[in-house]
Amino acid sequence: MKTITKMDSIRLVHHFKKDSINLSYVEKPYGEFSDSIVKIEILENDKITGQVEIPHENIDDIINSLTKIKEKFDVNPNTEDLHDELAANVGGGQ
Picture 1: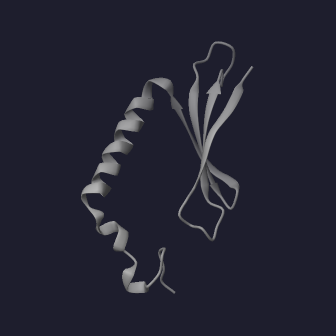
Picture 2 (picture 1 turned 180 degrees about the vertical axis):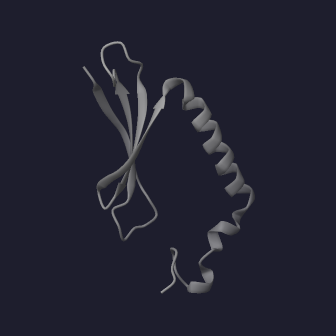
């Protein structure tokens, strides 16, 4: 029997919307003898608009890739000032 354990929900930067991602650990996703997975759900206005299922053997690769991306942001801190010309905290335009 499939068991889903929600581990975390992370709100995305669009504070005026209810956009987030849910991270869950799923045991026996496809039946008694299937391997556990990580499920990432993408929510827009609290409605699931997409999902990704990651097998256990790929989790380290995902974490390593995200760490490399984070390091890129740490080296290039200019991303914090992207919207200064708009005097806004988030992306803009009109």
